[in-house]
Image (cartoon, rainbow, N blue to C red; front, side, top):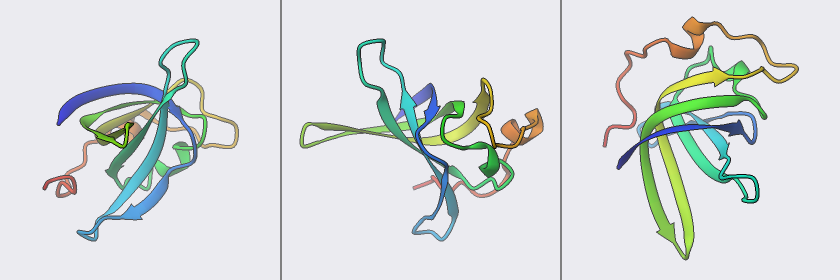
Length: 117
């Protein structure tokens, strides 16, 4: 695994999924720009469920994600997955989304680590 820091825009609203361990996780689709004439790199991001962040993680929101990165090549297709340790809201919040405070975006989480193998 690698350490990743990515800035991009959400391609859709966040989803709540349940891991095999029973923990609830937030799943994000992050589009990261690769330059003017190239398509964005789409990255799947998983993070601990933080209900206070869910209203702000909506399509179009620009975020910064830091965490561990898993990269696989399957049938000539690059799969990039990030297991987020930290998510920060950047830029303007899209219309219709609530306004977040700094405490909501960067509060430490003391729950057991659902990403531990």
